[in-house]
Amino acid sequence: MSLVIPELQASHADALEFLGRGDHPMLLGEQWVAARSGEWMEAVNPATGAVLGRFPNGDAADVDIAVQTARAAFEQGPWPAMTPAQRAKILWRVGELIEQHIDELSELETLDQGKPIWVGRYAEIPGAAEQFRFFAGQAQRIEGQTLPTSINYQPPGKQVFAYTLKAPVGVVAAIVPWNSPLVLTAMKLAPALAAGCCVVLKPAEDTSLTALRLGELLLEAGLPPGVVNIVTGRGDVVGAALAAHPGVDKISFTGSTQVGRSVLSAAGGNLKKVTLELGGKSPVIVMPDADMDLAIPGAANAIFFNTGQVCVAGSRLYVHRSVFDQVVNGIADIARGMKLGHGLDATTQIGPLVSRKQADRVHRYVQDALTDGAKAVVGGRQLGPNNTFIEPTVLVNVRPDMACVQEEIFGPVVVATPVDSLEEALALANDSIYGLAASIWTSDLSTAHRAAARLKSGTVWINCHLMFDASLPIGGVRQSGWGRESGQAAVDNFLELKTVCAVV
Ligand code: NAD
Image 1: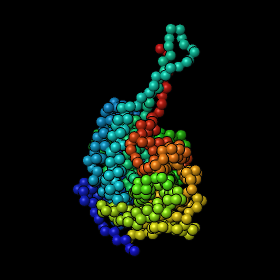
Image 2: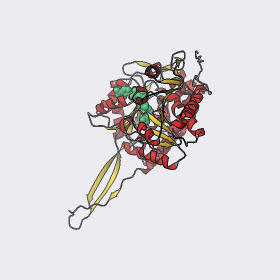
Image 3: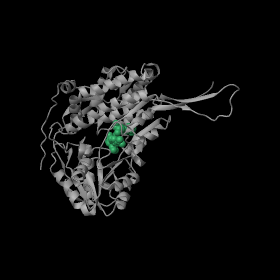
Image 4: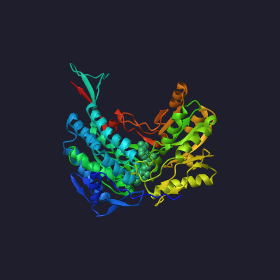
């Protein structure tokens, strides 16, 4: 079967205007600039291979200027000294602008990343707006404490008075992956800005367009120049330079576990604070008493949403043997009916992967699994004019030690294993180096909450999967990362606690 992909164009006037510019410079202070080297990279639509425009191929020299600019904005600029209410007003306005530009941003994200348009339009871009609104509120809730002490020494007639302050950590480097570019960017910028920090943002080289457009919206919202700077380019050049730069106080990194490890060692030079949101291999457990009308489409959505390019994708399925065929065949039927296509076609359910490289990688995992004895109930083929599409795939006959069960594939591929008990399901679910998210599908309250307590994972969903909100902390245990994003506590990622102890 050949997959024909039409050459669809953006239709929103603002998206057309943005794309019509051709070159998309990066943001240093209030200047939109090319890389110092004069080199550019191409933004490519993975569905068709069409070139969407160019952005600067930055390097360490650009990073250096960006860090100095952020430092000057932090030490001398108005942002950290503004009242919380003033900062909140600007962050709220960013959220409003994102919402006003939702159709434009969704089209740009789809063209650059490949995702079905509804993923951006109804989930990720509204999610980005909500991050700014939520952290506008948090900007006004940064509080210290007064502390009762038991210090013996007190000068005659004096008292000890102690309290804590929370101060912005300083210059933050925000490094973002390509799967959900704008919302993952917002998850870093919104809390960092709420805390009063200044930022150098490095988008992924496969998806830099919406970050650059967001830069314009940030300035339009009234963010002072230099508070957010954007350096585009390769990860092993720009990202590595940021991770090692002595002028950066904090790295907020989202990406693969492998690169997270190298960011961590580079950050050791000046002992930067580090938050890591890394890979996952999230288990989905379906018990025989689950509501199958919810569980089957829910498990399918858990793996096929955003074409499987989700850090918390439900990529390992553990189903009670008594309902294994029903669940696996149900998911396979959904997969068979899914429409592969250009993300701008509103009926598309599975878009291309972000690049040929990523599609080749995913396909290799499937082929290796088949060679190793797995069976594809559905899917498994690489398709499309540029071979960037992977059919939604369900693999059975897998063993716990196989690479397709242990490693993050990051595509629309789920591996399914029958289990005989909750105990067995939990043991297999926890048999992973990762621990980002998990879901359990059951109508028994006791089973649900026992599983929630025992699953080694940063998030557990009960009778749902992929439920996100700015108020819900997300992040991993084990090699899925350090720290949490979203939720009230995410501002603390960008704050230092200062103790003040006075004799009064
Ligand atoms: P990646 O690790 O290859 O790249 C992530 C970012 O790091 C990109 O901007 C890249 O340019 C940059 N980078 C690459 N090499 C670097 C280096 N040596 N030093 C510093 N920066 C460098 O990841 P990816 O392929 O873009 O994204 C997919 C991965 O992201 C998956 O593993 C996925 O699970 C993970 N992810 C995690 C979460 C989460 O919240 N835990 C969310 C989304 C994606």
